[in-house]
Length: 221
Image 1 (cartoon, rainbow, N blue to C red):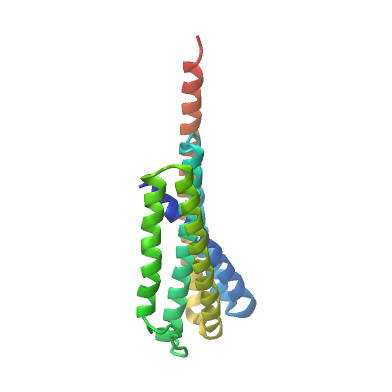
Image 2: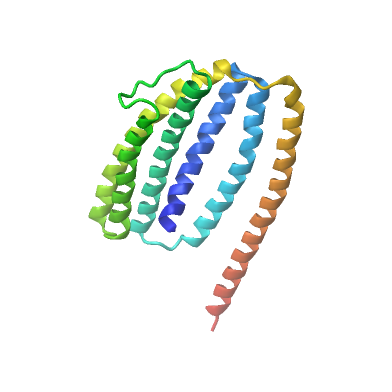
């Protein structure tokens, strides 16, 4: 579960970066209302990610150097997967929704997605086996080299996704009659989630302080 959590954290972090950049692009060149909704929606996953990041930092601060670097490598694998997901989502929009693009991959659409998974799937399994079945420095170096290749593949997916997002910028718009309703719904959701995450964060800090107090008292003679 720890490996899956690290992978998910890397995926979530990169997905939020992509989402924020997409919102900025919409505000600058597309529908300003749609860009504003993108930014407001970002508040919810960003709060969730910060809470998980803080919890993971408190729970895994005493791991070995190999374990810490292994967790970072798996997070980077999640970053590459987020770039691939962007490519898939924007390709789907450009081909199946906007219907103004074609798939350049020789496998066609959607078989090109399977072709990418044929690389990412075995790579993730191999990296996990290296880091968790053989937790040594040499395994860490090998997993690092594999992760560099995976990031290169992810960068190619990211560039393709950015290119496809141009189709979204030129075609997407938010209907005028839906703007205020959607804005109110998103703002209300942000406020509710903000209160919930604030309470969770406060409870997390209180538990950490209690743990520190107990560990400090146990050291007393």
